[in-house]
Length: 303
Image (cartoon, rainbow, N blue to C red; front, side):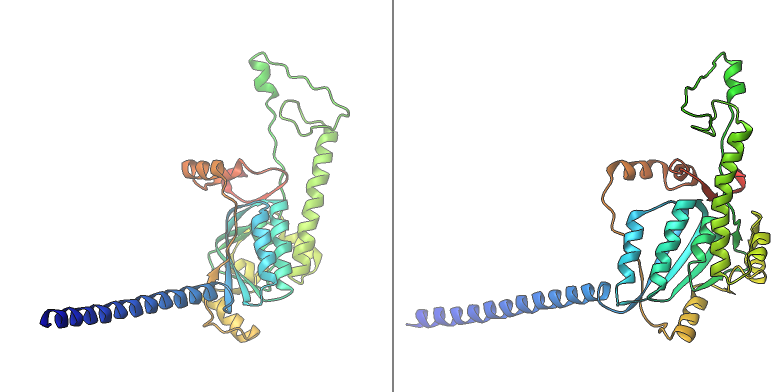
C-alpha cells in the first residue's frame, strides 16, 4: 500500500513538472511570435524616414527605381533622406534617378545630403530633392556631359593593320576608334552632347529657380566646393544629416525621433555579378566597364 502511495505521489509531481514546462513552452512561443510581429511592424507599417545611399558610379538601376516607386506610395515613409557620394555616371542613369526621386517628392519631402563628392550625375540626383545640404569641403558641380572616343588608327598602321568598314551611311558607327573622325561625325557627336547638356541646364534652371543664363555660366564643367556652391545657389545650406533632420522637423513638421531605415532594394541573385564583385570589388574601374552611352561624370583621371 505504501508503495502504491509513493508511486501516486511521484506521478503527481511529474505531472506538475510537465504542466510547468508546457506552460513555459507556450509562453516562450508567444514571446517569440510577439517579438517577430514587432520586428515585422517596425520594418513595415511603422512610421519612419527612409534613407537612400547613392554611391560610386550612377547607372540606370531598375531595382532601385522600383524601390523608389514603392516608397512613394508607402504611407509609413514620412520622408526620404538621400545620401550622395558619387562622381556621377551615365546621363540616363542620372536622369532616371532624378525622375524617380521627383515622383517621391510629389508625395513626401525629399532631402539630399552630399558627402565628399556629388558631381555631374551626382549633382543631377541632388537637385531632385526639396532641400540640398553639403559640407563646406564637399566637391560638387561639374554640370555637363561628355562623350569620349579614341583614335587608334596611327597605332594600327604602325603594326601593319588596316581596318575597313562597310556602312549604310558615313555617320554610322561614329565615333569609331578604328577610323579618323570626320568633321561631319564630330559635328553630329557634338550635337548629341549639346542636346543632353541643354537638358541638364534646363533641369538645374527649373529646380534651383535660377535664370538660364546664370546656370549656363555656372555649367562650364568646373567643380565647386560646398561653400562656393552655396554662394552660387547650387545648394541650399551647409550641413549633414543632423541639419537635414532639423529642416524636416522645422519646415515639414516631421519628427526627428522617427526611426531611420535604409531603403530596401529587392534584387534577384546574380551569381556572376556577385562573383565579379567579390573578385574586383565595387571600384571605379569595375563600374566603368558598365558605362554605356553619354557620361555625366567627374574624375580627375578621366578628364
